[in-house]
Length: 470
Image 1 (spheres, one colour):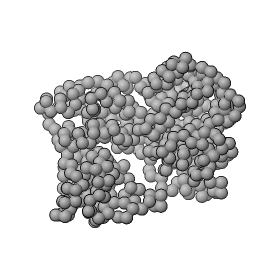
Image 2 (tube, helix red, strand yellow):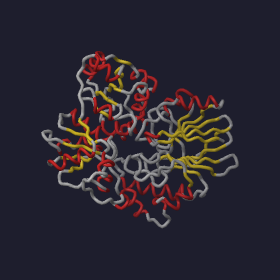
Image 3 (cartoon, one colour):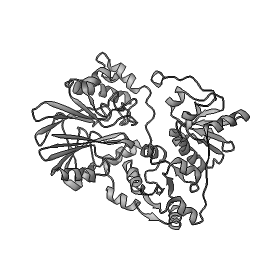
Image 4 (cartoon, helix red, strand yellow):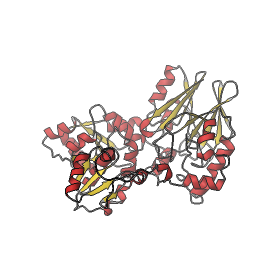
């Protein structure tokens, strides 16, 4: 028996490769599936099953493509309904894989069809659970992503309580826990940085598995402090349920080199968004007018999903050389399948063609501190709510303006004023500035290094408050 976790850091997502006696099961595959096929071929094995723990909301799964290419059977938990061929398992149904068995435990709560897959080894002993978004390390899945007209998030939270206590907690302490996500995912609140754990340890340390916790207490705690889900979650879940274009078609359409003239023509004809994925330090020095910055080196796909509201939006890329195909791939992981090409030669080719460029003023935290002493400055803190409440600059002119909700909060600022923007380290502030610039806010200054640099100046800051106590 062989188990391999294939972890994708930018999505904080774990897919799993399980092999026994020449037969393979893939659990929660990514959109690009060739990696799983290649691995099975290297092991002289055949992919038999593609198990989905639920209809994922934060990425587009590769289950449909993988089944088409390999003939594998797609398996969902009870109550799932799809627009393509899939096997809908019964609770406690078992699937043979070589010399091992995979047992379906229906664990509704995160979503109605959520399933945990129990791996039983060659000796008939419970070995591991692949818990999807039902159980994370340190947390459990949020129960507000699958609400139907007759169900509330409180109803789903109550279901999750029962699932955890009736299906997972009775399992032996030695059982390994393989969750679908780790820290960084918006599918839970306080996920651990670890990506593999032991059930016994979770019973001791995970707040949601306290033995003395009542259902009412669980519902209150699991719902407390959950931010609204990113706008793309429901759209990705629908793609996973209804189907999507195959990955190779999406990649072929997007991985197209365009000279500056063709790039500009397509941008105008198609109403394409110019997405600049270079480093923020490069973007501030020179960028195409009205382009949006979301650097591929940061939390790229989740920020695209949170900020670009139309999954069908035509997109043109300005990318670091050699990163074009990767960018198209990472966009497709969250359902953005309408990339139309990239600027060949990058921003230097754009300049050489005599095209207009713009810059964004970016200053050090020390320079910002000097400017604050000479005049009143308006400052936008674009960090998340918990970061802002934990510690921030003091002053009446410091305004919390979280990047997550920038599209809804434009009327909270004045395009006639000059604003200085900061985040934690400099990545998100440039994203925010690029969006504001594209919307007609021209008097913007980025504070390089963000709050990490600002708190080392002589500017007054609030005392640190641990986020867990907020």
